[in-house]
Image 1 (spheres, rainbow, N blue to C red):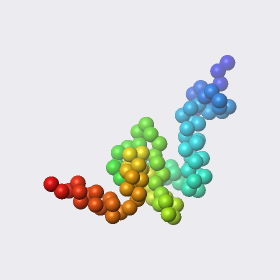
Image 2 (spheres, rainbow, N blue to C red):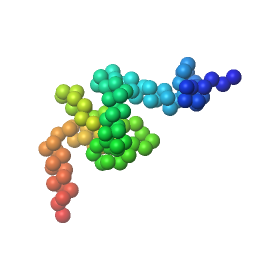
Image 3 (cartoon, helix red, strand yellow):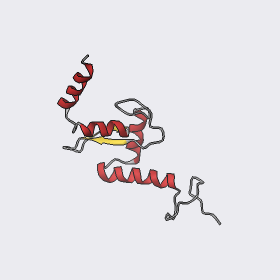
Image 4 (tube, rainbow, N blue to C red):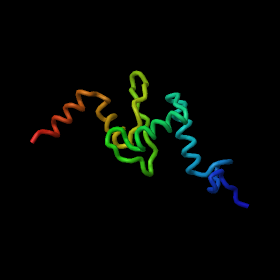
Length: 109
């Protein structure tokens, strides 16, 4: 007899109650609750307010979980970003001067 998740999917190996997609979703919500004290309702509201898109590039979050972007000094949450934009900010150390320099560089002919 196969065991099914509440969504109807097959229970993942090593899990007692969840399929892989439901387990990944649970872990995403749990991690963000632990790291930023954001409950499921707040994360869902942020997603809806951003229309399911990255706050920087405006591309939809299709097939990927959004990254919760935050200030590394205050831990204040700024919004949901795609992985590429989140990494981009990280490579610039969240430094506005560096980002402005990059914009100026791109505008040079």
